[in-house]
Image (cartoon, rainbow, N blue to C red; front, side, top):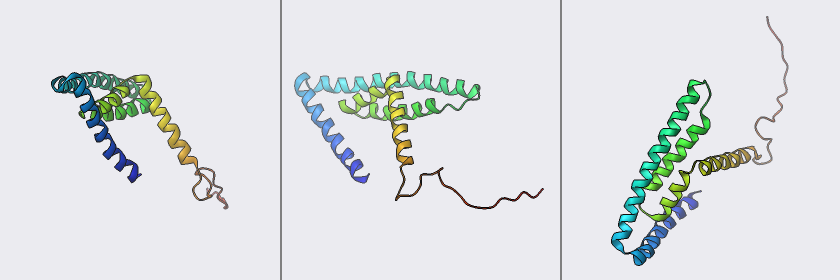
Length: 143
């Protein structure tokens, strides 16, 4: 896990710098800076809209007495997308904008949940998965 995070923290900035240089060479430095600032502002506006909508869904589900699980997870994804959109660069902006599309966001959440459930059900060291354990004992009711 540490190696993956280390690689991400090393490779993503290098990719961002590469893309900024390539785009800057094509459209010019001033236009590139404007484009980076514009995508951050546009992302913040879209993020605000999506965030308020998700917050309203949380309130509605809570008012109905339901647990707003999906809306809360969408809020977490929106928080991550906001951080990506505010990070200068085109690659992180693209990832952030993808997270602002509700069907893609929900599909990502479902995929992550499926992987975590499958991973949690996998036996460790040959042991039985949780919830499938038999406990031997006696029962006596004292009334």
